[in-house]
Length: 100
Image (cartoon, rainbow, N blue to C red; front, top):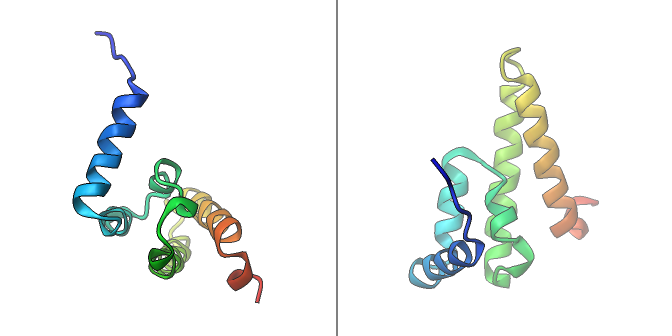
């Protein structure tokens, strides 16, 4: 079996989804499992300014979730990795808030 990656098609589909559903769908997707990869595909800096506070609040909630999950030995390493990813997103996009 061969898989062909078509980045232009992926980008067009993603942009079409955003155009049809709005940026709120990205937050809904992130809230389901707190997967930070969504912000690699759809960078926070490219989102409308009106969404930034919602994104920050979701990221803070995700840190709290993964921080609590670190109490379990089975999830400690993966949770630590996610906390680091989220911290990087916060530092890169909300530095003025984060450094208070």
